[in-house]
Length: 71
Image 1: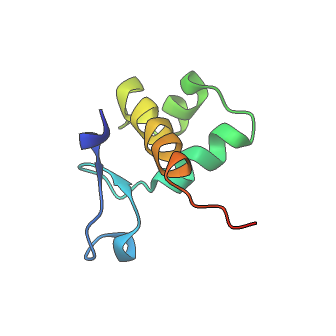
Image 2: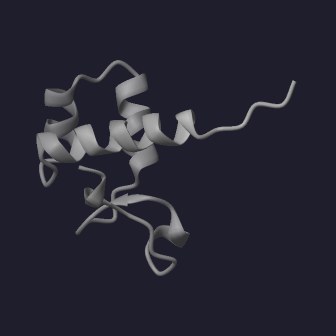
């Protein structure tokens, strides 16, 4: 599913985006964190699919799991 997420230095300064759009993963996650559910996100970004939103969430989870925490 994360094949839906692309990082291209020519698009949004290399920020992760949903493939085929200029919608950044961070924007989708911000809506989700702000209380939007998937249906409301799809209303806000009608060009996205349910799988696109899920891919953004999965991308975030995978990146948090890889994070190194120094204590």
